[in-house]
Length: 513
Ligand code: ADP
Ligand code: ZN
Image 1 (tube, rainbow, N blue to C red):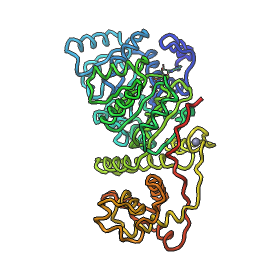
Image 2 (image 1 turned 120 degrees about the vertical axis):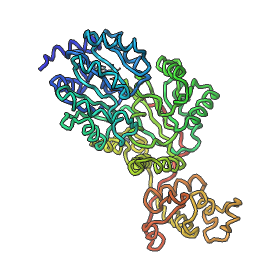
Image 3 (image 1 turned 90 degrees about the horizontal axis):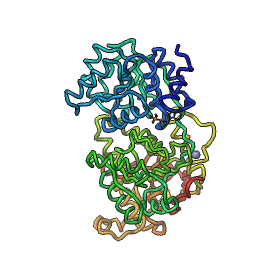
Image 4 (image 1 turned 180 degrees about the vertical axis):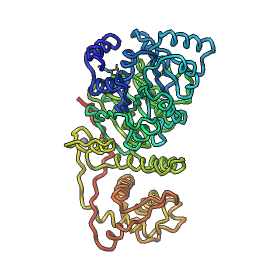
């Protein structure tokens, strides 16, 4: 048993803090007692101390396996400036540099040694000669093909426990549903690891989902409410990050694009400028953010629908790490769902990815408290609705949409379930498009039966019909709309359908106070 006073003294001396955050002390004691630990803590929860502090107390060198090669140097510099003897090993180092590090380690001058999973073989000289305190596997979800950042080199890490059964392994991640959690423990051969799952509830983050129309206009009005606040706009494609950044710049905002296609130096400069408040807005792909420690990010916008809830939660989790109110907005567009479905279908583990995308979509389409949905995904249950999501603040108003539904469903039937949503709407509205006229659709019975409903309203109504199970999208058949058996109840048995009013015209909310 380590004397708790030693832990507090070490916390103060090397990290400058007086108190532990929830779970930290428990985790640290577990590891110091020689047991394995699996730590699931949201971004900003304080995972690093859970292995850095024990490393300072233990004998020998502790090995930290981290995927973030680009950030290793910064991490190590940061530790060194706190008086913690740390170093890193990667494939870019020269023989001489490596030997220098080996010597330092063997002399007992290094407490924390960072290494990428691909470079583990460089540790052989150390494995054979030096006492090891613990193994920390950071971003442990990378081990699992269930996770969203799968990294093949992580899968060899099971050898650590086999070869060094007495040395504790601590695996840490911000994102792991139950399946991923079990996968991590089993692949690392630490099935008996004590699991520490800290609350995922970040009640200071407001949650809003908006239809993805006029996104730039919506973003600009959102930003006008927050002239100097830092934030991130996440986009799926590199091109979109650049387009959005240049449009925001043209509107006089201080915005920069960031994606993996930029050079290493340019990327670190962008990161630094953002961290130091020289850049207000980063328009980025998901390449941006892992390992970035900036506590005053006040908002995160998803320009596109993320492909799963883990990624989404990690990305919005970068806002409000200081605990102050911060806003998140997700733009939900039908086109994104179609595109993500294609990506997922082509992936090697398509079944898993499609299931995850479905959960993401259910969240975005939710008509009940979004935070409840989000937390239940991570196995946590809220007693009450959160009061800080758009659904709680503005509960949907249902009306009798039976006639609208009947029109849409019979139009789909008359098009023989052979057309996608856009054509169905054009027919309902009596469009004179060449594509409509060439097909002779002006002669079918439902042509123009609901021209008084705006195109975008129709889109929302049909999406609601899809979400409530009346209509399906045949993703393998050019996205044609198909009727389900529920639809037949509406068409032939007068079943009633509740719809909600489209909401996209509303302005985004004012900053959280
Ligand atoms: P994570 O790796 O979980 O994203 P970090 O380990 O980077 O989180 O910690 C996030 C922030 O919280 C850092 O700025 C860190 O210094 C701070 N922090 C961690 N533990 C404590 C503590 N016990 N008291 C105060 N601040 C802490
Ligand atoms: Zn809510």
